[in-house]
Length: 223
Length: 404
Image (cartoon, rainbow over all chains, first blue to last red; front, side, top):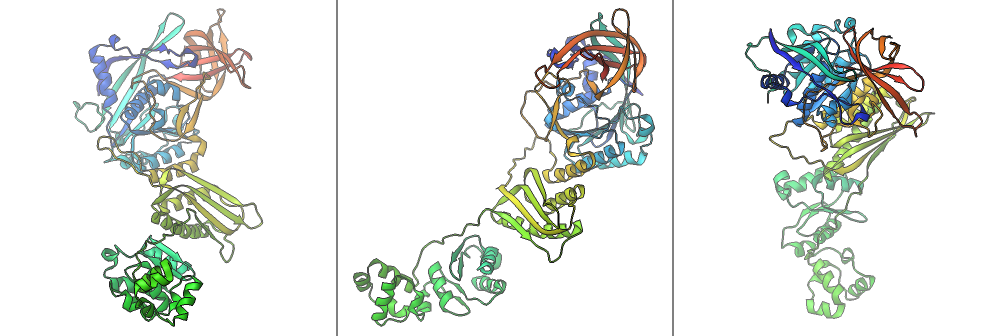
């Protein structure tokens, strides 16, 4: 396993527009070492196209922040993205603060129905033309997410094979086992509080696991 | 006339309607498609389908006179118009009643007899009308066609012999109607972005459906598929007696692809995909989010997918939230200092390890549903980092979102 570390520092401030309560996790470059900036860049730009990537971790470990950063990167590249939100937890204002262009994100709110989510993902992956198709299973109960058959993941992967679509799944744990080409496992290290009045952010450890690839491969979004 | 017009439209868009019984159209340029003039004439003859006369000439008036006066099929070579029309009776020439009476008094009976008169004499005795009529008698007209413009209404209606119970039967008829309308749109180089379907039902209110497409399209199969998905979602409540279908014409979509920009979803394919997904999750749960210009938390609308030029911050890794919709009611025990100490709810519970707040937020006091809350960021023993709030007016606590 290749550990991307030692740790990634999420630094947040309550955003400029306090009344909107947008939490802007400012990541001042000056506070990052050069190596951490490179590692961060490699994570964001190393998601393979035409394959399945899983982002897994417990609650409040940084999964959604990574997903929103991916959405921001993809939409900044003039691509359309699709987000299948099983439990309807996506926050558009946070994503916009991350730089995601909301008008280029197709948001499918499934109201807790995982079956609809998988069908929608299959339809969108097969339709083509999307740079990123993401399925957010982060809050789906484990008893439901574990019952998703492996065949469903293989079918989804097959739908994006040899295309320019990156398929990303976000969950509490990895679901697709050998079907995914890349796994990013997150674990929060510690929260960072500024005095008793402000949550600055948290540290999270991202572990990158690649299947069937040489260890030296860098994370990239193939162009 | 409708049959003649239909036949003419098959061959050319430049058609003149010459009532009561004649249609003239331009066949120049058809050589590459249909072959020689003789072959074109043969194809027209076969297509017209009803007893009619066909004449091909170098100008419209000569063709009209030949078709009206000569039975069957005739092709007049250029320069031979006078001899071809010479035997036609003068009552086919037209002109004012006085002019016709004058020619009759002179004992003239055919095109050829009138054409043979000296032009100066005709001009002196019959004036401009006489000159113009003599040119027509000689087959020398050179005017342009007065082209018929199709009214830009693209609608069809169909009343089947018996009422239709099954959606498949409705779709079968709708498919034929769509093919006809799309063919008319194609002839006019138009497309559509709005489809109106009305079904007259047996002993029930009229069924109406409007399909609004994101871009101009012209694919009858795609339209039929979209209609099918809509009918599956909302089937008519009674058998169908009559169908009305209308497509609103718009200019054809022109897109300039860029070699250096990534491909986007094909509009036709995407629209069918979105219709299928809409059928599953509901139309209100599908779209691109649009932030509403308000300070109220979690305010957005669902819009359509598009590339819009708005100012966006650069992509960056930021701490984002996951919203609970609706916020989860919670019981919160506070410390003597007023800070949350323990949270219990249907989804999350735990002891508070650290917290920050309160941050006050309020607004919309002029609306029906104002908000006034005190917000806290808390970390609990389960590992969750949450934003919770207490409604200042009601005192009710709720978990608004989690940081992830």
